[in-house]
Length: 221
Image (cartoon, rainbow, N blue to C red; front, side, top):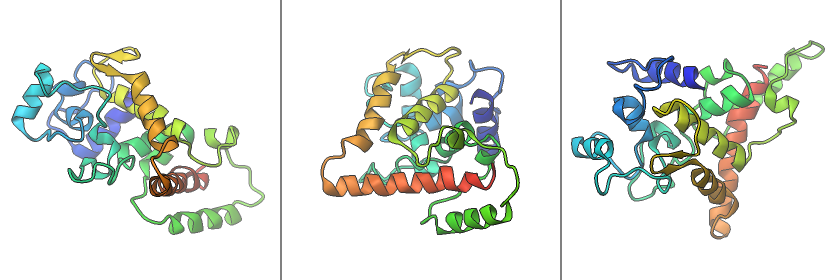
């Protein structure tokens, strides 16, 4: 995802200093856009003191796996009164998922929020029009992944964070950030929802993911 993430960031944000697809040293918190996407959701990256604090790793601004980064959120923004609102609907997260499990080309077209009815309708039409034709299968089809799972979301979240970071080779610990714990926290969010209502919201979110990442890509395979 290293090169793809650079492409997506440059296309969507048009930063003054574009992300170099071949150089990870310029990413991470030293880069204004990568830093914004990696910034803990409860902090305001637009605040100069916050940016400086994170870069200097000063007290109260140390980034750990205990906070969800902004790239996990829809439109990369959060509601301070409801940190669950828009969580796991970040565009670059969905793009990363589709690039790995469906195809890099399908990641160029990420649908916005919605009930997914249009996606399913278009997918049905595509199946009818392609009846009898040989089409290339994507990874999700090859491994018979019919729905998005919490663990696959967690895996992609780790991969996207790594691609946004300045670390050049994979390691489970990045400074104060523990990728293993980050993965577990995301999985637990889905698999250990506290109560019936929370589980209902989680199930609805997973259904939304399946429509966006699997159904919408079938017609593109």
